[in-house]
Structures are given as structure tokens and as C-alpha cells.
Length: 106
Image (cartoon, rainbow, N blue to C red; front, side, top):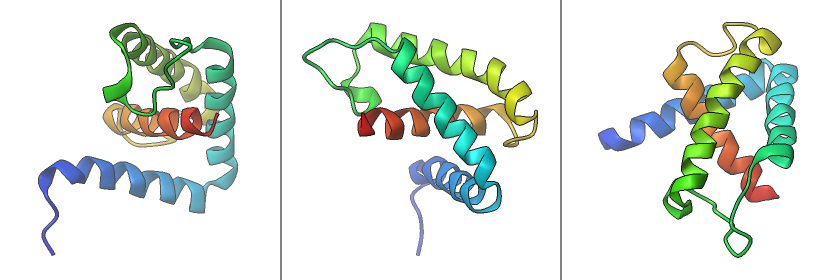
């Protein structure tokens, strides 16, 4: 089965999250708790809109989410250890995926 190229990033992040959850459960729980607490405290959204994906966010929300993720990276590396995932792009994509997962639960 051939997987379209556009799905490899999603697969890589899904694989990284599943591996993190399976092999480093406490680390995974810290990561999810950190994001949930941060979203509860910091993320603003238009009251009549509940964005569930990047395509539904307005420009301000998108910029704020990206800034939050950059801030999370600075805070998470010392909290979880520099090598909680390999590579900044994977970390950013993972945090984006967790952002939407946690946000959609709320």
C-alpha cells in the first residue's frame, strides 16, 4: 500500500505520540497535563467559535497558538528533558497535534 506523501508527517507524529505513550507514559502524562493547564490559562478564542483545527482558527488565534507552542518548547525541554522527542520539527508537530486533541476535549 502506498501512502500519499502528505500523510507521512501525520504518521510520524502519530507514531511518535503512540511510542511516547507506550514507552514513556509518565512523560506523556506530564506533556498532556502541561498542555491542558496552559490552554486553560492562556488560549483565547472567539466566544461563538470553537476551533477544532487550524483551518477554523482566525489569524489571531493561529498566531497565538504558534507563539504558545514556541513558548512550550522553551518550557518543556527543561521539564521533560532535551530529548523527549528528536528534532524540533517533530516536537512542534507533536505539540500542534496535542494542542488540537486537548482543545477539542474541552
